[in-house]
Length: 321
Image (cartoon, rainbow, N blue to C red; front, side):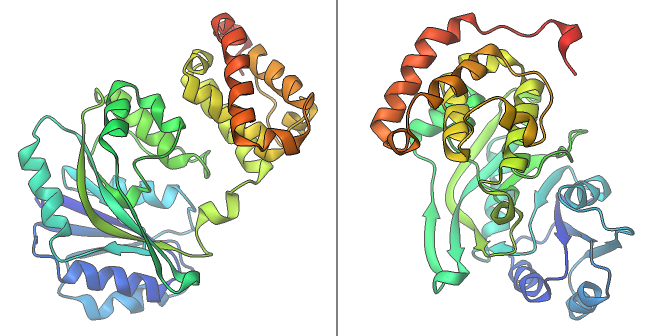
């Protein structure tokens, strides 16, 4: 059995897929399989992979198409290896030793069940501008101390930056915007937060207009229901963490949520904790232009947190929907 399953959820993007497969071909580490699940309704993907008969590709077409993230989950479920390495078809390994670095980390850190590396964003619509993303030691410590620190920022990156030990957990199909970091929190909570960060850029992330995150960023009908559902799943007491509190403060401000009616209008009809109802009402007292001024907004959020966080409780079980 190979050590690592490279799971590639593909969809009608042959030029990107070819770039990824080229980067896999030159890997010095060879103890892997490739699980390629295809959401395309044509043969474009299967035609693209035909020249790569030197690679251990197992191809599966999804009929009907599964969409994101169920296409990811389909590949994970078909994987036979102990370790899962998702690679989105528009991302690719940054060098020939990338997979070897992940494999070495498994051996060097036997107590870890989750690995992620530094990565490089490549902006295709900006003359391939490079942006290398590394985790600072202080942020790594904060993440080890409390996983909810991910609400401050997704320090892990997209799934292509990760390698984890396969278990029964999968990405939640009800999410698109928060799907990656919601899974990270859930997985790491279930496995004792045993992660290892690799401080080398091992993956190139293609930043392009076809990304799901491009179509969901600052879209109220996506972000509002997803974030409230995630909070309900994690528990309202998560709001006692100031980074979670600030996350919702910023969401309401950025999406211009000024009253509770907008929560329902944007597709969420579940429970909302009183602290968040108060937060929305409080923000309404101030012009958006003032709330967008960072120092003022942060100070106002902190004052609201100090006066409301101590009263945060879970809803009685029968009130959950």
